[in-house]
Length: 165
Image 1 (spheres, rainbow, N blue to C red):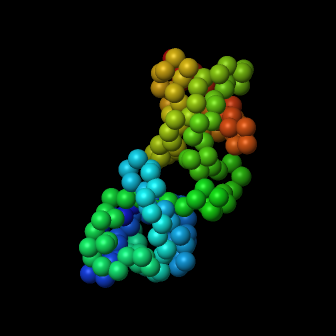
Image 2 (cartoon, rainbow, N blue to C red):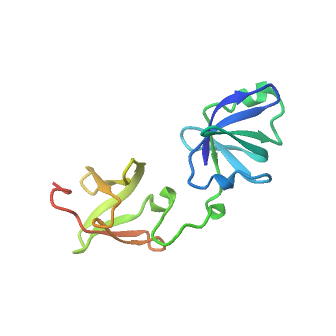
Image 3 (cartoon, rainbow, N blue to C red):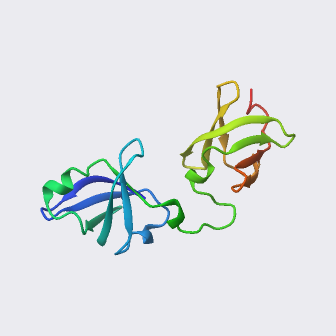
């Protein structure tokens, strides 16, 4: 959802860089997991108040009441449970939903599993670890991604010329 980048004031408010396409998720009463760089969940926080400050958000949590308490949060990430995410339109996916999905070509050749998703300016790029241990970078564009089945954790692609070389 966002990364806590600094403190703001002395009453425990924090400055957050939003990492979501749904800034409306920052509403009073929302419960977040606080996670470190490795994604390990440390504790839960309840949002009391959110307000915009340029491209950043200033957040106040019920559990954080001082500058010292807020300072220890710097660099951590706010996450929600996977079953609490905002619904997406058809054909759109959260990165965590794609991780571990098996990737096949349109001819049925197994390539490997999605290991990471990178956001770029034009389109996302899906990093696949191949069965040979190599890295394949798939542009998430209609010409390449033919089908995504989240229930079966399968992706069917049409590799453009040179993509798998």
